Image (cartoon, rainbow, N blue to C red; front, side, top):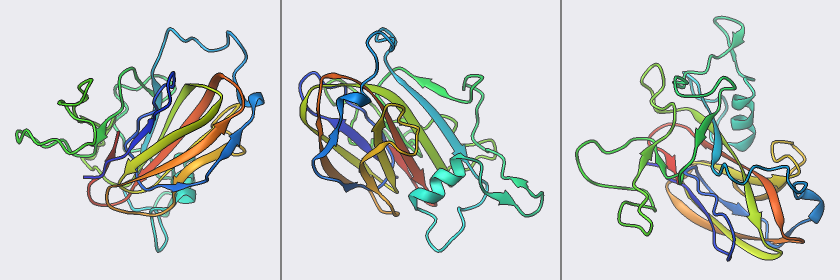
Length: 233
């Protein structure tokens, strides 16, 4: 199973939790006050995450399928099926997604690729015995329409209420990930806070960044998984 957990642990910080992959760090990255959302522009009465899941029927091409650039290309529909000359279809089960293709998640993200059936064994870093309880859950849309649980790329969007000063985050994951913040965190020019640009078994890495001013900030986490088990929290 591959599991990732991203946590922020500063007072008055909304923790962004995700199950993805590997981590690398950029120490003391500075987030300018200009990245904060305009006052009143974010509905703080609707907490949660927007999640987009993409699954391909084949592995991402190349000698190492677990790379950030390839996961971004997958999310963008950039891989062409040689049999159809069209982008590979998204095999994720989007039955419960909205018209925009995003799932809305209003609780803690603590996801695994495979939920142990009937064993009672939890494998995420957050579990039913945690405070508050956060049992392992499945990844939205996975297994996909073809019953596969592999070749996944996911983006998670949210807003973080951050305090000025140094913030400490961490990711525990199995395959790769990237965390970024910007005026719109989906923009390629957003600031990368932490990443792991490869495949791996579950592991944890911490990273720090400095926020110039209190505020709400647009945040994005990219997670990707190749073959075998996977997950994040």
